[in-house]
Length: 461
Image (cartoon, rainbow, N blue to C red; front, side, top):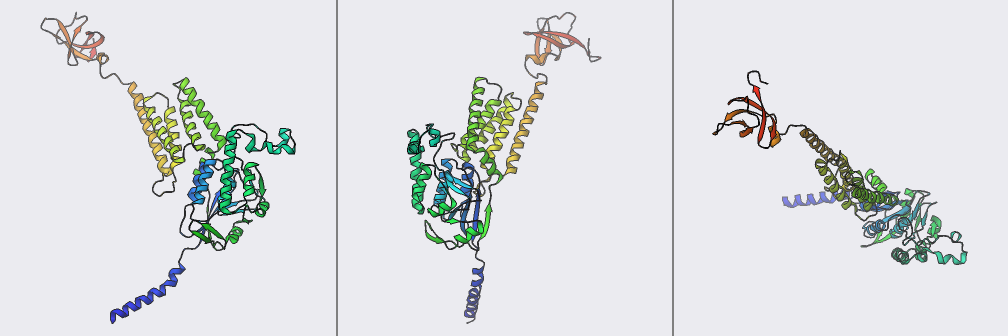
């Protein structure tokens, strides 16, 4: 009976704690990712990392202001949005912002599309770095072409270039059309944005069904999102954002540096510097600076154009930096290889640090400490090598010059010199007698030229 009473009291206590346990449930949270840059490897790394789910995360808002960017980076972001278990809201913000080119694709891929008044989207025609794919060279407007409005269709980007241009345009049309059909948004404008580089204002985009919300600020956006249903992979979900806490995430200094390096215009410059630097080094070897700078710029250009993923670009830069620092010890480059190696090592570490997987990141203090240690080892090795050049020769025939010994006789009665444990013939033994201390002044084959030493005064006689 006593045991039953204690059991009943324990159950009553647990029932009394249930309301308290429910009260400490984690409040809804909205994460805001601030993106105001060209869509490239750095922004893709930032957005994909920010789309990671967390407990209590109700929605992720991408505050977007971009002129466009690389197709590969855009598709990486869109894949992450489509696979996200958390609703993603793309919001073109602030006033005067735009979601052009790649930004339009990201907007169409999001679960909810929103804009701020006085913003625009569109102009999503695919272009290569520096111009249209295939370089067709067709003008973009009837005025430039010298043609009337009736000929406008003949100069559309999709029809003005060669086969490569048409392939890129048709591929982009199919891609954005599939996104529009998935989210139930206006398909006709999606095609116009790619085929004709069409653009829309926020008000017109809402009227045409391209977006769902026009919000003046973040509280207004969260208020309009509250109660809205979105379709995820596991079914429909109702958003509860009215009283959600806000977590703002802006790009760190690392992402800002990588964003500058990943600018497509800078990528072209880096590619040129890399090519001509290596060309000069191969045609006029020995200087070192063009080759080192060219190789580093080439690796950065491959990263900026996303021919190398961010992690492999970092690994390549670190490996190249270690190779340069090791070569500095053995090659007389006057510090060019060592300094270039430290720069390459730091840039590579910058690409690899701050990773999202806990325990696999590289901190800046650790990276700086390793670079300083490497620089110290290079300086120490170089200092030792310089000092070794001024030391006297310690082995070989040349080390006999200045060596001391004494005169003795051999079996034939001739005078020989005993120096460093060996017997040597004397060039001019006149005036010498057995037991005389001598010092070597010259060497000719196996014959020594010597001079006697005054052992009493320790000086040469």
